[in-house]
Length: 299
Picture (cartoon, rainbow, N blue to C red):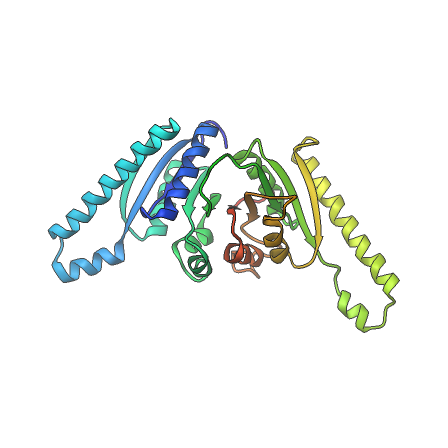
């Protein structure tokens, strides 16, 4: 993230959202980015309130006043803790739309939101604010699950060799410039089960699998070179199997111990995945570390 970049962090004043804004403030301090702290009162709920009590009722005015007060207190707390300038912004309307509008207006380099545990994360792929932002976002989105005790140290970057892969590596370096990168690819030898069913001998199939692994390894090294990664700041991790399952398994293996997973918004086929890759959806639903979703791709 460049020194002149901008971060927009959204909060609903919940405990999980505190993790997100704390991480956003830490990133702003580490990168020199400006930070906007945003709260949006849901327009639908306000409209329902107006139907019952009338427009401009004292209760609605009180809700806005209390939100502004909480927002100001949080901004002051972050400024004192992280020595960063925080711009509080209160709005009302469709939450995802208001956040996206502000991010576009400020040319934000990053959006930061909190996650709320397994239940919400499952709903994230079924229509939540986070999901709607993911589907429409043209800017990277960081979903924070863990309390931020230190800068990101080990980052797993999931690569599928789609146009989004190179951008994911670049984004990981911007958000976590001092972290060790684990460049991960899960390969599957095409039609392996059909070959077995057709009676192809085990030695031939094993040779086929080894070639698939070697090809994946070569492509990971080529991406690292294309991104200008120096030896010692990255390592390759090539697994065989279904990508989302292997990513979740790798998150907390002792030798990896990754505290951030970086994924492309789309997979190999954005059209087939309905604008949110199937692997990304699965990791968001089942993983337990922070997730950074890259929305850019190499041309």
